[in-house]
Image 1 (cartoon, rainbow, N blue to C red):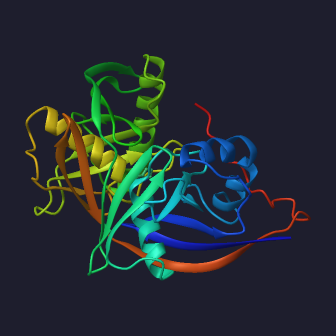
Image 2 (cartoon, rainbow, N blue to C red; image 1 turned 180 degrees about the vertical axis):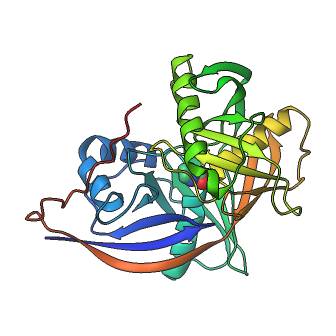
Image 3 (cartoon, protein in one colour; image 1 turned 90 degrees about the vertical axis):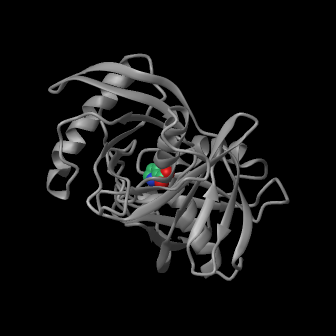
Length: 311
Ligand code: PYC
C-alpha cells in the first residue's frame, strides 16, 4: 500500500490537490526536467491522484518538488485529468495557500519554480495571493475558423503559460444554465483551431459582459480534458491581458477584473520588461482538505478511471 499525503484547496471554485508526501521518486533537476520524467514514467500516479474514484475531471494536481534554483521556496509540477499542464494560475494560488497552511511560508514574496520558468509570488497579509506570470504574448490575431455546427468564429491565439484561443464575438450566453452548450461550442472550436495549424492550443476562452458591474468581463474557459474552469483562469487571464496590451486596450499597471462563470474574480495587470508583457494575477484560495490517499494495488481501480476524451 502506498500512502500519499495531499492538501486540497480551491481557488475561485477551481480545485487543486497538492501532493506533499509519498509521490514517486523522480530524481533531481529543473521543474521542466522533472515534469518530463513524471509524464513519461508516472502517468498512472497522475491518474490515481486526480481521476475518479478519488478525484474528478475538474481537479488539478500539483506535485511539490525540490527546486533546482535554490533562490526558490519550492517547485511544482501541474497535471490534470488527461495529462500535464504547463503553468496553472489558479493552481499556483492554491499552491501558495497550501505552503502557507503548512507553515512553510509567511506573508511576503516567494519564488516558485514551475516547468515553464520561475514565477514570483506574493502572499498578502489578508491571505490573497498574487503572482507574476511568465512573459505572455499573442501569436496570431483574428484567426477565422469554420466551426462544426456554429459557422465562422474569429479569435486570437495567445500564450499565458498555456496556449489559448480567445473569442470575443459569439451569440452564446455565459451562464451556468448554458454550460452544456458552452462546452459543446468550445470543444468544436478546439477541434477547428487544432485542425487549422494551431495544434498547441488546448484551452478555449470566451468572453462576455460581466454580471457584476464592478468587473470588466465574464469568461468561460474550456480546459484540455473537457472540464470548464470554475475560476477565471490565471493563465487565460494572462493571455487576455497580453492581447489587450498589444491592442492598446489596457495600460501598464491598469487593473482588469476578470469574472468567471461562477462569479469568482481575478485581478490582472501587467508590466513590460525587455519589450515583453509580464502579467500579474491576484486571487484567493482556501484550503479545504488535508488527507491521505491510499493506493492499494489490490483495488482494481487503484490507478483511477482514465478520462476518455475523444477529439
Ligand atoms: O488558472 O491557469 C489556470 C488554469 C489552467 C487550467 C485550469 N486553471
